[in-house]
Length: 410
Image (tube, rainbow, N blue to C red):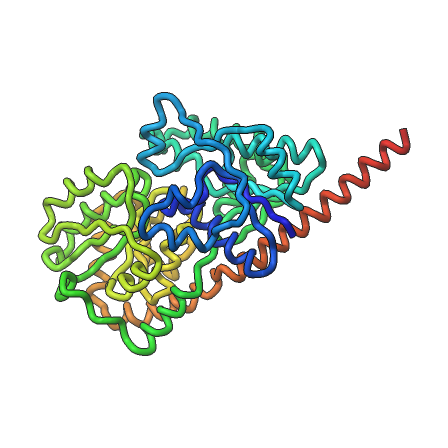
């Protein structure tokens, strides 16, 4: 089938939603589908190591609009490596006309235009709920202001999600969050999925042992966290936890990602015996680094799923996860030893020390985490995604038939 993805910024690799879109596009194309993207950016926007990652979702015939620059807030968008696409009516209509079905990734202006047109002409259309309002409001330090978040939930509901029949959510947590807020579409819980290379590496590390550490990591306890350097991800909690650990002098923190909090976190890490390392890694480099990691921490307050956490424990690492009420990531914890009180450095240090005190148990539990990661393969996720698309196509055909019957009856 011809599938159109609508997403403001597709080719960035510092945004989980865009990375998921790239991977789904690549897998769908392997299965014989035609996938095009309605967005503002092109592969030329991607630099360095990012190019290889973005190629996985590279399309042959994107429908490209211009970047929409928001007065006052554009510098903030740039810091988060995200920009909005300008709503060009002709391009939106051409893109939707090309497709057999349209899938919306983010709830912004160009997506609203696509849904409006699809509903007008009777085109099958689905949507995904990837972006929590809390992720957006955290950028202006209002992530925990409930009434402010609810304004966004209400806007998303009326402008996007209650205007489609089927919504993809990456976790049951997110499905429950929107269902209780009056979102009426059928909810499909489908993981964003991890690539097979992470599981293949995990099997190798379990069978033959983890690789020797590089010279700069040799003799150190490596704790890694992957994610954008932004307020809601709470890398600061991990940095502040290290001094409370009995292993403080040996711990080497590694943060894989970039973002607006970089300078702040570099300064915060100056107090540590081993200054944190900030890396921006390709998929292959990340897999190699996870092989040299002793413990994975995911301190984020807000997550719709956290693929980076699944990728980490797919390589046989034990994760330590913030047990936040507005995050889906705690669902991955096999027991309470992998959880800590969100925003609490002392409790995080307690959990870190437990696993570092018990290396044999950590190795055994790491194998169990590897086994649990097999449920979240990209291939399984795309199969479920195809089923959702086919269901929408059938439902849309039925709706057209009913509409035609009413016209004839009149």
